[in-house]
Each structure stands twice: as structure tokens, then as C-alpha cells.
Image 1: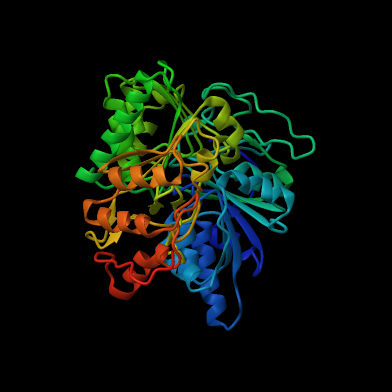
Image 2 (image 1 turned 120 degrees about the vertical axis):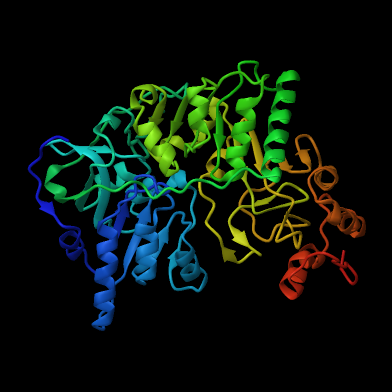
Length: 501
């Protein structure tokens, strides 16, 4: 690490500077690159203030979800007044759904510009993890970029967590670029996932850095669960569908860049694509790089990966850090407003693959709410890619809760992605290609190819009872499956009697 002249602080000293009611931008995009010391100390301070009868809450911004040391610690201490734009922490989720934390669910590509536009009010602090720092205030970020460049440029004061666990050899793996805002914004010169448009460090005003907190902590990433028969079948369906698209000439023989969401299904899809003998080596242009991409890079099935975060399990993270000479020229980390930028996604012709909570008969997708009202995690970056993808794919198991919930319903209980953006739906039972189909044709292909056999007949009956119209909807029967689950804990045996078509 480079020597610098900034004050060295303990995490407690840094936390003591932050006041009740202030807004903080924390580095994190998933647990990758999360600040790890200051938020824990801030949570302890909040508890002490509450014990003394004094209020203490802060507004929390981060690139996406965070590690337990941010959302987990601060939620447990009841120290969050508002949170944006995405989260995955169980304790924070409970507070959001109880109305105790204001939560702003947003497309991730819009976060940084909304901070610059002042839509969140003043940003008082940036607390950002770094792998290195120069004497002049050049910050080498660690395992994610996220919105950190904008937090650093917009914050009134900055605290750097200098984490020696992240090697200084990460220098050069980041492409730091912050666009101008309208009306002077110009085009981004990216025509290939490996194109660089920025520099290797975040350049900040050194006068704003109030201190440096030294840490030596790994990211809090967890290895994903093992592949299941369901996720394997979904992955194979996606791979077979894309191969058929190549055979038909609808995807170039050289293939196109891929984007994949987070989770076990995403890993299974990527594994199936990597194993396909008909799909050539491809590029990845995505928001998170997961474990499954690493062996594909090593086996030269993935040529290059552009991302905003290395969202890796502990063992895989250490493997990458131990082989930086190999990965340095094959992985590039960008700010999330570039990794997720819809115009770039459209220009590159990215094939987007994301997961859903539920899907309906016409192609609408719910990716954020359980039974329409309970926030799960948020929309994340799925909308950024879906709206502009060359081909947009959503996948999910056909049932949940041992078959008590059908993820295929007459109408989604919450809409994140409309039928106008979604082209392909996939479950373990098959693929519903919605392109060139009207609503009734869409409903037929979704029922036959994606719904679980136990729910196909009730869904057919629902369509039959709908009166003529462009889109077959019967009120209030379109939500009867949800209502039955709320009443009985099981959607099976749904009845449509009394519906007003």
C-alpha cells in the first residue's frame, strides 16, 4: 500500500463524527466491497444513543445490497431512517415491511445520477472501502465499484476503510468513469465489453478525506447452494433455446454478450451455457460476476467479463486473488450506472437472463414482492437490462412451498417488468417464447410450457371464463389464487365460481 498523510482513525472515532439525521453513501454492491468496520461502530453508537434516550438514525445509500456489517448491523440497531436502492437483509426487510424504515426501490442504473441530481438531499458522508490510496487522494477500490465514485465526488466528507485483505494488485481492474449530467452528457464509447472509458482510480479532493480506518477483513460473500434438479433443468432449457435461436439465425453465430442475475438459477444457466458445445466462447456484460463465471474464464468459455462487482464465495474470491495475473486482463469492474446503462446494453446486444418471483399468463413479471405487498429484495438491475436487451429471459421454478404456490398466475400481484419488455419465460417444465404472440396466444404457451401440471387445468379454466377482449382478464378472479393462499396457505384447488368476467 502507498504511504499517505491522512489521519488514521479507529472505527469508533470515525463513527463518532457522524450525526443523527445525516445521509451516508456506503461502498457495496452485494457484500463485495462493503465497508466493514465503520458501520458496525456506528450501530454500536446508535444503540448507546438509544439507551440514553436520544434519537439516532441515518439515511443509508449503497450501490445495491450490502454485507451484514452494513444493513445487518444498522438494522439490528434500529439506526436506519431510509434505505435505497436494493437490499437482501432479513432484519432490514422486516423493518421495511413493518413501515419502520422508508425504502425506495429503484433501477440500479439510476442511483448515482439521482444522487448527483440532489434527489436524496445532501450526501453528508461517503464511507468507502479501498484496496489502496495515493498520497493525493486517488482511491483504488476493492472488489466492487457500484456507486462509490459518485459517493466520493458528492459527499461533503469522506472516510476511507483501507482494507489490506484486498491486494493492491487490483489496481487497473477498475474502469472509473462518472458521466456528465444533462444537458451536457455525451455518449459512452463502449462498443465491446472490454472497452475502457475511464481511469483506474477514483480521484477525489483530498481535503474531504477526514481519515482512514485500517482493516483486514474478507468480503462477507457466501457460497451459493448446490445445483438442484430444478435449476439444472432450467439452465438446460435456456441453453437449448439459445442454441435453437442460433440455428435459426436470430442470434449471430459469433453469439452475443450475456447478462445474468444473482443466485443458484443464474449459476445453473451459466454453467449450462458454458457446457454447450454449440455455443461459442462468449463475453459477459453484467452487474455481478458470480462463482460460475470464474471456471468459464479459466476454460476460455468466457472471453471477457465486464461487471461492477466480484460477488464471489470466500474460496472463489481467494482463488481469484491468488491468480490476479491471469484475471487482470479478463475482468473489468465499472460503476453501476455504466455496467447497467440501458443504452449500452442495447448497443452491445446483451442477452439478459434474470429470475422472477412470479410470472403471469401474458408475460408480466414480479421480481420484488411476495403476495403483492411484502418487499423481498427489490427490482435490482433486472429492469435496466430487460428494457433494452437483445433478448430478455426470465426464469423461475414453476412452484414454491412444496407445490402450495404456483409461480404462474393469471395476473402478477406486483408488476416490475411488463409484458412489453419480457420476451421469454422459462421454468423447469419448458420455455414460453412470447415474441409475436397476442395475449391469448401468450397465455396458451405459458400454461402449456411453464406452468406446473397441477395448475394447468385451473389456469385453462380461468382463460375460458374471460369475456372477449384484447387481454383476457376476469375481476376479481385474477387474484383468486393469491387470495386462496392467504386464506388457506395453499393455491391448489382454486375455484373460479362467481367470478365477474
